[in-house]
Amino acid sequence: MLYGSGKFTYARVDEWAKLPARMEFGQVTGAAVDSRDRVYVFNRSEHPVIVFERDGSFIKTWGEGVFGRAHGIFIGPDDSVYCTDDQDHVVMRFTTDGQVTMTLGTKGVPGDSGYIPGPDLLKQLDTITHGGPPFNRPTKLVLDASGDMFITDGYGNARVHHFSAEGKLIKSFGEPGSGPGQFRLPHGLWADRTGRVLVADRENSRVQIFTSDGAFITEWPNLMRPADVFVDPDDNIYVAEIDGRISIRDLAGNLLAQFGGDDAEARSHVQTAHSIWVDRHGDLYIGRLGAGPRIEKFVRQA
Image (tube, rainbow, N blue to C red; front, top):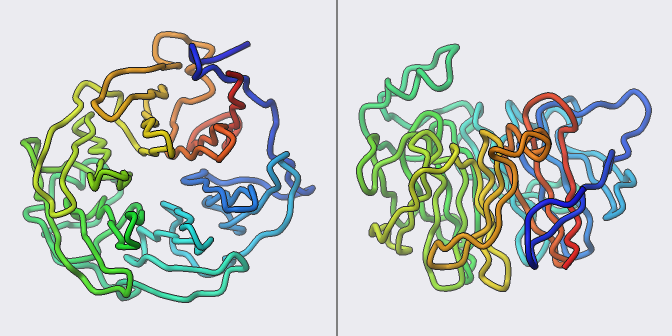
């Protein structure tokens, strides 16, 4: 069966990831691809970073004992690996072998946003009273073209933080709410080549778009709780919607292709889509939280 349409038509690879015996994925919160086409799967298990070849064959694991709770992953142009830990309130940069080269935030010390921890992650969003300093349960880091870092912050805050490449905080923007420039779980994000920052405002079911200085530009509403955003070198924008849909848009937000949604079979493979990454061949990697394969690969056909 094929998914999508036009030049965004994909074939799903059944049982792509070939785990060693007795190893299992936890919830896959992110996947990213390095310059050698190796796929880094960030997941909530005793082996938080599991690395595969492009064909799904197992290479290695790392990060054991390092993370409180895996969330977002991003790989930069130099193959530095950035992992976001929403339980320990830190973002860490690693080599491809898992050596820490930078830490942003103080482990175990949340920024003040009024947030009160509790068992219901979504209900606890209502306790956030104001946008606070970094970090309170951060969710994702990305780099812009200059190497600056943008971080969504997240389950315990309602902000995006902009850091220099050296790790100096430049600016924070956002506050709790549903109006322009407000967030209810800023979850995933991307900085495109035009200088815009696209933020998956998950529980407001929209993507908001800002200048790099945090000025609101526009929004794309009526999405199925978008969790992550990826922009490829051709300016195609991929949105993973956690309620079971993948959407592909152009820079203006026009829909180019889509699968999942009302198609039950397609939706079953992207339900709980928490992250999305597109490799240099145009193939999709979808990290999932729920039942079924936790990492899905879709190979571009056109």
